[in-house]
Image (tube, rainbow, N blue to C red; front, top):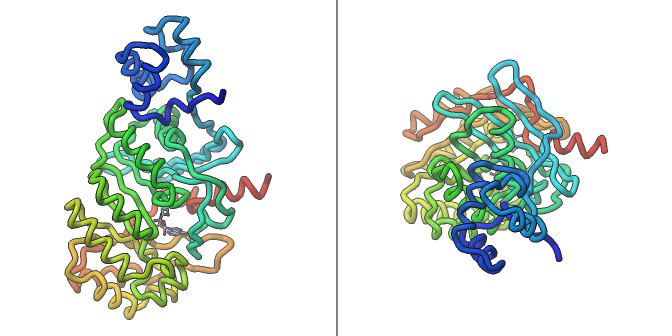
Amino acid sequence: MDKTDILSLTFEELEEKITALGEKKFRAKQIYEWLHTQRVKEFSEMTNLSAQFRERLNENFYINSLKIKKRLVSNIDNTVKYLYGLRDGESVESVLMEYKHANSLCISTQVGCKMGCRFCASTIAGWSRNLEPSEMLSQIYETERDSGRHVGSIVLMGIGEPLDNFDNVVKFLKILNSGGEGLSLRHLSLSTCGLVDRIYDLAQLKLGITLSVSLHAATDEKRSAIMPVNRQYDLSQLMKACDDYFAATGRRISFEYSLIEGVNDDDKSADELISLLGGKNCHVNLIPINEVKERDFRKSRSVEHFRKRLEAAGLNATVRRTLGADISAACGQLRREEKANG
Ligand code: SAH
């Protein structure tokens, strides 16, 4: 019989499995605490359970955890970039960033990505599979363990499209919310390229998370040229879903706009963005694009000018600080290099 990935079980699921083994319900609580608060890696470490029961757990379950394959530490600002190895030999990336109020961790949700955004490195090495909830949790647990730093906020902005792995991501969020530290989902942002149907589903769950939408262009023509997903869900459908998300959750949307020289950084593009978002209760996050070796997109030189134009029109816009410039490797690059070096 295949063993069950115990770290991917919600508390309710664990309770069910443990009682099915003929054990008392409260044992599930003890085990959940060992897994998500103490974060042990072996059943033998669960010392308040009998040796016999620990052995049975070992026969039925395994505790998934990731191995650090590479660690890059910035000398400028304490940013740490991890390449994590998974059980099947695949790898994903996480980035730990230091902000004034807390450490923030950017985690991956899939091995690779299918979305094909033209400027993004994650898509170059292709898509292999979805990450399990345990593999998303383990990015947090291993990063905290290795760095000795507490992660206060989490962004699902690493490799992959979180809404293309909807069920596992939702399960991950539920476990995170009920786990050891009960990390509030208010400090979690999920970034999507715009899978409209799933945005409606997410709104229904009312998890209290922040939704970030990768916009990068404000007309269908420009957006479809750099983001293939726009051909499936156009801007009018996307904006309607965003309005619905705000109405259902009361959480304002954060729109990401990566500025690319000569593609989306001129005054006309700014005005198109103003007419798309004007009057909405939202926030615009301007990102100087990370140049990716394989792509010929260049960083815009008019980031501040663009921001000012939005601001003058009453849009709430900030420029994202560049962190870890010396270990830059835009998201997805470490994994791709690793694959290329085989
Ligand atoms: N698939 C999700 C989350 C992962 S990407 C999404 O599309 O939102 C996280 C953010 O980084 C997205 O806004 C994405 O468009 C942006 N991004 C990807 N490649 C980039 C690059 N080279 N420079 C700047 N931002 C990039």
